Length: 129
Image (tube, rainbow, N blue to C red; front, side, top):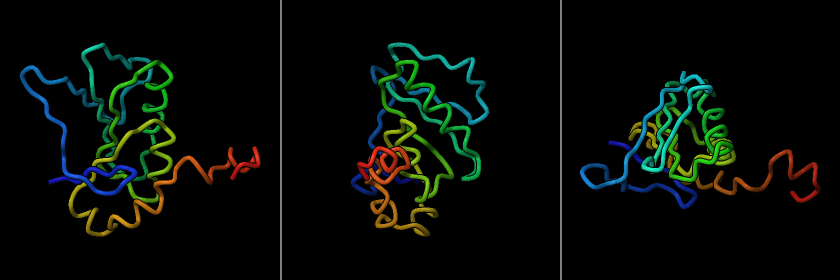
């Protein structure tokens, strides 16, 4: 099983894919950024994080947003609570983690980092933090 993490905490999976349902695209973290493509039928893109130390997914998310992707963007795999704000700033809407990680890092640790629009270095430089 997996847990979906959003700014409001833990949620059950609510994405439905199938006949007449929106299409989801799965991308590995080693996807060549030059080959990033999506079309109008792509409603969700899930980017795999095989390790919390593998930050390539953050780059892919940012590039997708810069190229105009407006659909659901999900980080899936080994993202830890400390990386949640970075994931949101990169363009992810949510994070999918397994039950074991949710047990080790409970909901309160994720919610603590849900104020991702504040407390970044850019806000401090602008004097708005």
